[in-house]
Length: 133
Image 1 (cartoon, rainbow, N blue to C red):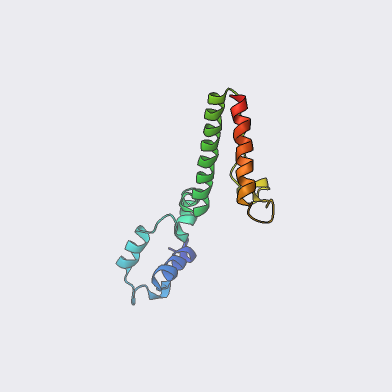
Image 2 (cartoon, rainbow, N blue to C red):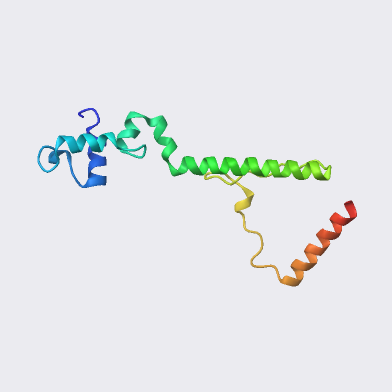
């Protein structure tokens, strides 16, 4: 209790409104014991006791895993298209992560493309692919 007093008090106050001074008065020792035994990986106490497990319960870790999955799926998709077309695949850009410089965050143009221009561009691309087949 003494070694992890600040973490326990933080968890108590933030989750229940009790403080260490309430133990033995309005909060009995059994309730405190039950509270501590049922704290999850997102608690301050768990951050102190098991820091390597705490990181697995964070949104940042989940987002990093999802970005990795996105990158793998993009690579699989490019490889499958490459196999079907017989052309060498262009490596896809990784999903933009915080702190990384990535061209996908740059804005190109000032607004929406007019429908007529979009239709012409699509037809041009369609013709290019038809000529290669």
